[in-house]
Length: 178
Image (cartoon, rainbow, N blue to C red; front, side, top):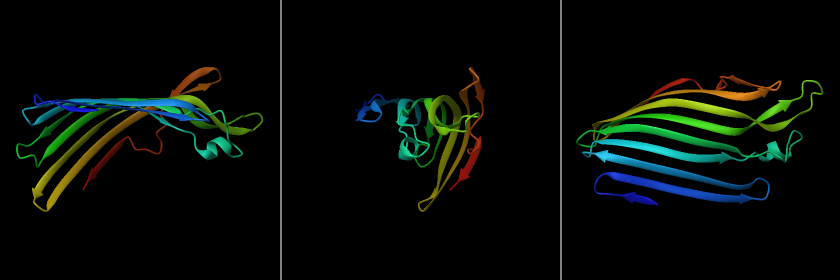
């Protein structure tokens, strides 16, 4: 569903239901309201959900677990975007917060060394995105961005929840220019 009003209020909403014989029913949604002020400033929010199914390897390999559940995520973000009067330049700032449950991980029993994939952890991420673009002339433009992301995983360790930073393959700060 997409609705645009002449007053500047817009909303997009959608959902999808999937049924799978191995991991059951999953419903995802997205709700994206925004408001455009004076044709130059937009305030927006996005609330959405997602899921990631286990891979065939995670289900059926020698380490597989046919009882794995999909990872389920919910995300909320909010931001402001500004446009120049000629619409050739803009800047945007967005804050996001994401929660994932039933994170799939590779587990090795420290006593028997038996290994398999399991659902166990909870992941919580948050961050900030800054983006800007400039039209230099009709054939040339420049885009710049900065991203900050931080997160922690909470896992069961000896019967207690333990949280730690785990985004080791993703930098906390990213900058780019095109």
